[in-house]
Image (tube, rainbow, N blue to C red; front, side, top):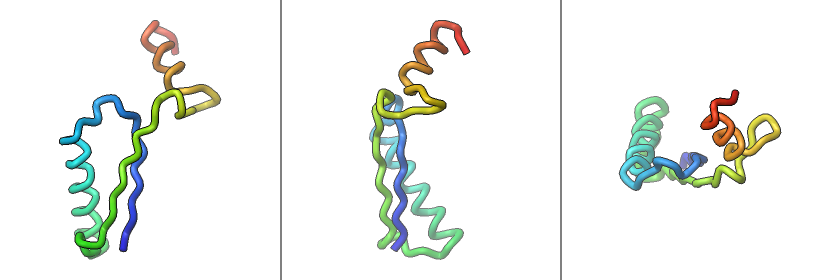
Length: 71
């Protein structure tokens, strides 16, 4: 029983796009590893950008700086 956990920031993650991710990952596991779609579990966790850090800074700070023209 495959278990896939996808972590994303919520911006742009519509219910339709999340459904597409779930279907696509399920199909990929079936095609590549011959896994049964009926027992494949896909969980999508939406993580607020304040709670996601890269290089010692939150994604919120990184995006704010990029919006102001910074690196």
